[in-house]
Length: 445
Image 1 (cartoon, rainbow, N blue to C red):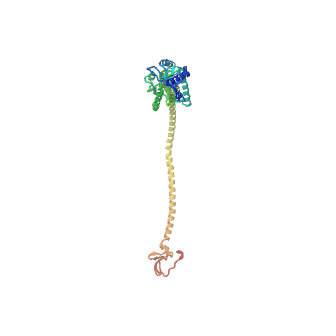
Image 2 (image 1 turned 120 degrees about the horizontal axis):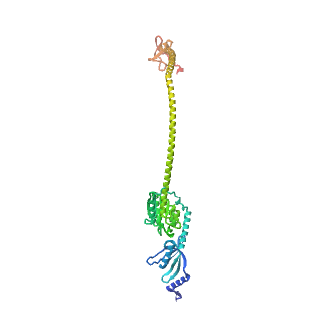
Image 3 (image 1 turned 90 degrees about the vertical axis):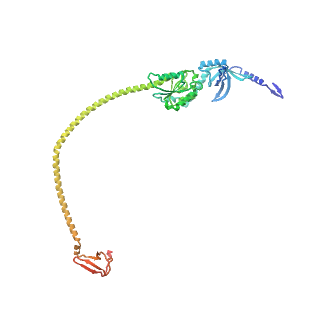
């Protein structure tokens, strides 16, 4: 340190040395630390690893730091991690590690990891699994896929797997070489089934299947064996949710596992191995086949019973028909005999009766006609008298006369003037008269 004009001046080395001493004094030992490996940053050529560590709270990064694992430690740590979890170190897992914080004048602050506790990672996975399960149940979708109706014949199968995997090969061999010759229509939707990209890959393929869901009866997720960490993708909340709400039944055949994953829990059916998943589909066919055979046997039995019953019923009806026919024929013969007897006597009676009726009616007609003629004759004679009385000569004979003016009968004095000559017709003879005076009768106006 130097002083100039009352100022204390430090060199960079002095500051760096002070920082190293302060860090070493503050963190003199190795400490067990928890963090999430955001990115592993392993370099195969050197064997060194520089993981980016983060600490999150409510999904937000609150602290981050880059650490280092030298190749000698990385080999031991990774071997230990694989033996316990079944998988190597990778991105996205929470770990408990033993490390020491140091500061170097040239290389700066460093967090050196020398050991890890794989059991902690398994515990964290279990905790996250529990949280995901509780969330699915709270949303009311945990049992949604299991409550779907399963098709009677799951013939059209969408398979999410890897074409080159042994699990997929075993599944295909089982369903296509079944001893009952049941026929399945399989369509593969390739996907990553483990590792960092498994969740996204499987979710994308589920979305692709959903777009053409009418072409399938069931979905099978096929995967071979693996350790618990290898199955960690199937405890992912988003993937489990996609399976739970999927509109078609999903059968999980994702390999041996001591602990059941969430995807296996929410799927319609969980078959530990791909082979068992294949046998499950075959069994559904077989169950339907048994039902058909049972129905066929029942149909044959009931048909025979029905035929026997119908035969007996027809025999009874034929017998009844014979008896009824004979009875009706006998009755008809008796009626014919009666009709014949009636027909022999009836015409004579009817003819005689009709003759009497006609004679009686003819007599009545003659009597009525004579009476009507007499009345008509009397009416005609009366009318003739009345007509005779109305003849002009008979009217004049009774003292009446007819006066003509200009050869027209006069009925009133209108139009006639004094001095006019009129002609009056009497019963015997005519008079020519001259009008002297015109007298009007007011009562006839």
